[in-house]
Image 1 (cartoon, rainbow, N blue to C red):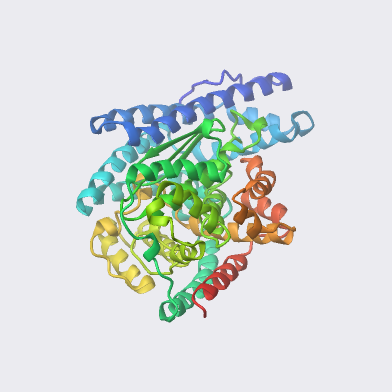
Image 2: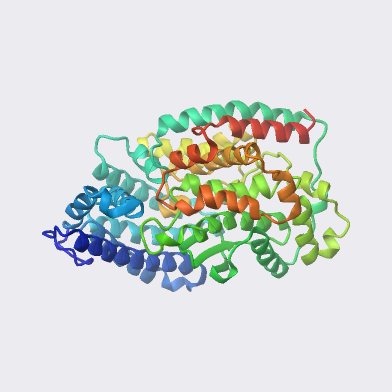
Length: 514
């Protein structure tokens, strides 16, 4: 590792005050680099012209290398060790900073900075190739990039922990404390509920109708609708930027700047509606981290599982609830009075909760959604074990979609090219979507058990009580607490997937009259 000293840390320092000043200097450096990376990485794919991709990649690679060198500076390790030995002087917040920084440093210190910079450069290029490949249904052009990304991630995982399975390393990066054994148990429970429940729904004679949401919906009006939905969720509009992209995402740079992106399809108004509610959940988390954590390593969500808990909560447990149908219908009527003027809240509720096996994960209903995640989880394991390469993915994808969802994949644009995650090197991320859904179901149960009339809150259109509950127990803690600790403190018990399976069973049994 290069002998740089971006935080101006003297390894020989032993004065506690000087050590805390050095910690603050390091945090400012890391914040600045992460902010720059986040803004370039978040806005670049949305606003940059095509020719800018290569130079954006170079800029991000340089920033990534500076970031790695800053946290992996040889003086940082001793600094954090000294600080950790003085809890009585540091207080709770600084001790949390030290703990998180030590974990972040341990994850990076054994991977050469230049290798991480090269990986950043590779994923920027791969993401640009993926966008064009999806648009032209051209898996072959993306295929070599996928193999290169997997190979690079396997090597980096070995650098991080040579004794651990490479895929387990990356699962733990996205959700601390998880591995394949954890997710295998989790998905086994979810699958044993969802597969027979879905079969019963498909066989039911009482199928909901989607006719009330069919038609042509002006795309510009849909973007005004997106702004309405952000207000309805309670986002700080002064700290929010909404943009348009192929694949919706959220990028939180700070409490004061969160990027939310979505897409609008003229023939599917609910796609943008629920994408915005989903991404808005991520944004709420980022905007409500404790002010005391500003510009520190604590000032963002603690994990992707907990982040997806917020997005899936507002998309589904609030957004697709029958109680929320009336407030949601009100904003739809405002922008599309002709299409929604005579639609009832119950009709909208049924339309947005049709359990129909389909091809596209982001458009999936709440019941089939975890099966989409299971497909990706299983393919990722095969890629990392070496049992499959990128050339096998379209075939595996088609086989698993036929097996789990009973649908035929017509082409790669509607199959293995539909998600951006692999082009970004986000292997190990997908399982957190299902885990986050399960976290959310347990949160809702805890809200109700604690006396909240959840349905009445949703029906009112004022989500303040829900936001306050999540802010006090989850959001404000940022990265100061891990998911397991947050769940147990908020719910009074450890995580249990049973709340999720019970929720799905109760909801869809009622809709389909099972």
